[in-house]
Length: 309
Image (cartoon, rainbow, N blue to C red):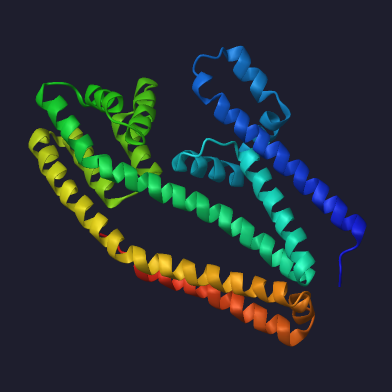
């Protein structure tokens, strides 16, 4: 059955309002990104006292908000928790409205759940991409630390030099580590926090080497140079594996996109066909099975193409 007109208008108004608010805050954050360092504490307090700032503070007090804020920081997405959630809610409302107009409203709720999954998948992809970029910089990081320690500098100073010389994301993450060290955090804990933010085998080996060396001593320069050459070889292997598996991933997503486009084309050729189909139990079963197969194929292909090098 069709949604009542007042409900449609209300849903559309709420969706547009949230989308406008979230996108406006996101664009404003991008525009002020380079000026944040130069702003006074009074300006920062004024920003925190804004409606979105207060909402963001409330969200960060919850366990879900803390976890989401950590994921946003790790992924490098310059966005507030409140902005991310409002964009997700707005997109979900838009999906409910659009899908509810084409097929049965119950599938609109499924589409909203799919939108939430897309947002979280995007965040996970950004996390993985940033972690891969950091891993690619690990050989250079190990060489910088090796050269600094070989010159007689302390490990804290070597990390500061690496933070200044390396580009992001390694430079940004190392700056967080140096800030923690300046605030009095022990070297071992600061390095453990770094490995927890960007978990990987390569970084785990490097951090373990630095921790063991700080505890028991030993030839740190030789160990770092050996690690640098080993990490360089692993980087090349990871690159080859990604190149080989890239075709399978793209093919899987291409099949799904073409299938969804084919279903939409059926509704274009025969207007109302999807709604008629989705209002009957057999049609609902067919659509549910097709959706389950699409999701299952994505999960299977991801598990097959995920190789730990």
